[in-house]
Image (cartoon, rainbow, N blue to C red):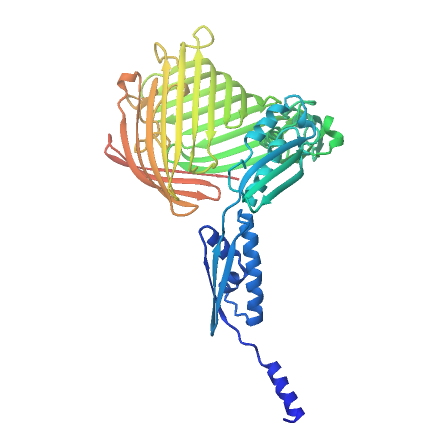
Length: 577
């Protein structure tokens, strides 16, 4: 063949594309090894993506996948696997893997040692003992690289959460004996020095006194550092009302371990705030609310809050002067309130002066208060009466729910107790007890069950002289649906008066179609009476809708009151600006 023609044919052959194959991969291996290999082998990934490699590329992927398989099996403790692959050609390439992982390597010995202050520090022997007892890998357990890495992280976490924020892994080795299928683990943790709290260094504060930040710290200089203290400190700063954001950290510099500086960075809230709100409910009607807040009265961080609320059945004006929260978590305040309401024929005009001390720690909120209340009351055609009481009150509330709106699990428990004496600015001596519990249960992916119950009692010889807010009535959106707001009590000519005992309960099922919309089915029961023996629960049944609006929850319920043989609509909506 002439040379020019031969060269031409070679050139045309070079330009011709190499044959490609539609690839299918299967893995024959025990579970869950099969799922691991199918996910990560290069050939399996190419098959999932629909790639069509040529012969050379397929050979490369095949070799690389076998290496990957050995590495993956080693991380699972299989160091002597048998891997075979079979390729069947044609227009479609079928690549079959057969994996025999062999015996799994187990932990034969664990040698855990410490360096640094934790090795000989006072009280550190207990911490070392807990770390050793809780070490995730013990002799006889299967060896996996992921478990080995996690075990080291957990050891460090135990030290970092305490007084050793500079702790590190000094040495780490896993020696594998393939013949014995055994792993010998050695780990040395260097705790570094023990850190103690130093001075607080503040950044970002301009409007408010530095004392607010200093008083909220839950530790004293010189105490050993704890990570939980720093988390609590940051939470207290953000909950104080003065700061929109807060960050608390230390620099784990061993040179400053004796007195490590605490760096606090805050973003302040505006000193003054004006708010306007509107809403409506079937309990008290349409609502307009106006509020004004100043957070730095007299340049001492005193907060003055003024509130005004006008509703169809209730009008209220209030002023409160609150002091900054102390390092122990206490917040003291003085308040004055004027209120007028006309509900179910019981009309009251009341003035309340109160001094309170509150504290919130974790899920628990407690309040101790001393309040003096005077009121003028008229029920229907009954002549007006004047009531007053000086009461010492204690309230305890636990909130174990992650969501503010429509929680799916958890509970809210509130307990209250109050006492008054007729020799101390009170018309009548009494003891008031009240409890309310709401429990949330998750039912499936989209449902929840809500159980609520409340009990109240005023222990006194007579109800005469006791202000209305201390006594009880039932009925309404958050009580017994199917009945008008506070319509269950002592029936008089032209109205319903408050009484000394209360008992209500509710069972409600919610199903949420998506994040924002849901439906409700419920049964409520309860009553209010002047003696426990006269409590005769009435029932309400119904269904409703739930909507998580951008401005707050919206509830709409239609309830049937068995005792009245009537249907009643219950609706609530609130919007704040």
